[in-house]
Image 1 (cartoon, rainbow, N blue to C red):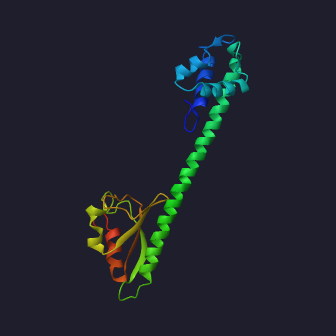
Image 2: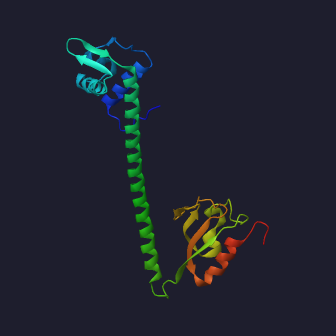
Length: 211
């Protein structure tokens, strides 16, 4: 099935006519309805039909003249037209997807930069105000935290540490919410003061068998 993302209406109509020719709904050598009838069928303006027929004429799929109307010329050319239009539309879809991914990347980059700025601001405060440092620790497959949410684990209550990010399979979740569920081999990036690091490490390393 051909994607219609970003394809103009007249191109979709030309594609529909070409597919009808390939499926032998329209036979080579026969005439099809004039522009006015096609405009009514597709509920578009005659100008839109004119553009659709012009596309097909460029590929010598049909001929068109005021006197003889629209005549089917070549089914193979109709097949070539479908292939080329589909390829062009796929390229346009990929281009649009790339643009959206780049926008998403820029949003993520900005969020990371905001978190870095926030962290640097905290790190450079006088020590009597805040003495927080960044740490990261992996979560073992048998860790007690596995399959618990942040809320269920009462992470801050037990550790005094704040989770900045969780890395999982090459992807990072920034500022995970209370419903975020820990999985084996997650890497937890957190900040805490030096006094709280030991109990945070023990809490993260605690296993289901109690070791």
